[in-house]
Length: 317
Ligand code: CP
Image: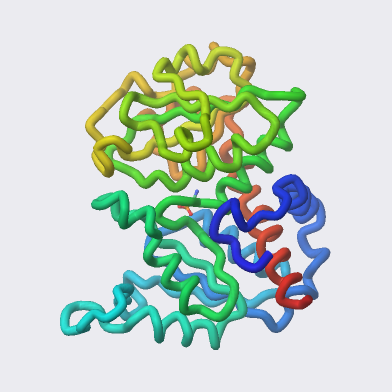
C-alpha cells in the first residue's frame, strides 16, 4: 500500500482485515520490518485511541515514533497557495511537508472538519496538502470526511463477532451536545457496506450522508423499525447534512436504550468512542454484555498495524 487516505487505497479489504486479525494473534511477528523507520504523527485535533493505538502498532513493528501537536507545539500552517502570509500563519505546508518528510518514513495526520463549509471540508485541505507536498507515505488518522483506521477496525470487529452468513448491520444517528464531523459515519458506511451484510442507516431527516445516497444504502427514518433483528448496532452522532454543520435536534428519543436493543437479534452494540453516556447511549447498554466497544478500541492497534505493515512492505520492495 502506497498511502492510507481512505478505502480506495485498499486493494483487498478481506486480506487487510485478515492481516489485522493475524497481527492481534502475533503482534511482534514483524518486529524487523519497521527497524530504523520513523512514524511521524501530526495532530491538529485531540485523540486518545488513535494516538496510542497507532503508536503501539508502530512499536509492535519495530518503528520509532515522533508526535507533534500542531495546536500547542508547532507553527500554525498556511495551506492556501499564493497567499501573502502577513497574518497569523507562520509556515507554509510546502516547506513543512517537505521538511517533515526528511525526518519521517511515514507521516500520519489527524485534522478534523471545521463544519463551517461543506465544500471546503470535503476538499480535505490538510490531508491533500500533505499528500501534495510530502515525499513519504501518508496515513489518515481521521480527516475532515473519513476515519479509515476506524472503519477498518469496525469491520474487523464485526468479522470477529459475526455468527451469521449475512448479518444485519445498523448505523444509527445518535444525539449529542454539539455538531460532530461526518468522518466516522462516512467510513463506517464505506467499510461496513462493503462486507456481506444487510446494511441500514437510520437517522433523522436531513442527516442522511452523501456517501449513503451515492452508494444506494438503505435509509430509514424509523430507528425502532431499523433495529428489528439487527446483529450489530453502531451508534454515532454527526452534524446535519442538509443544513451542513448544524445540530438542530436535541433528539433524546434517538438515544440507544436497552428497550431498543431488545428489538435486535441479541445485537452487539458498537461505538468508536469517546462516547457521552446517557446522551448517545444509556448506561444499561454500554455496561451490558452486548457492548463490544472496549474490544473495538483494542482492535484499533491491530488495524493500524496491518496498515503500517502494508506500507512498510511497499517501502521495502
Ligand atoms: N475513535 C477515535 O478515533 O478515538 P480518539 O478520537 O480518541 O482517537
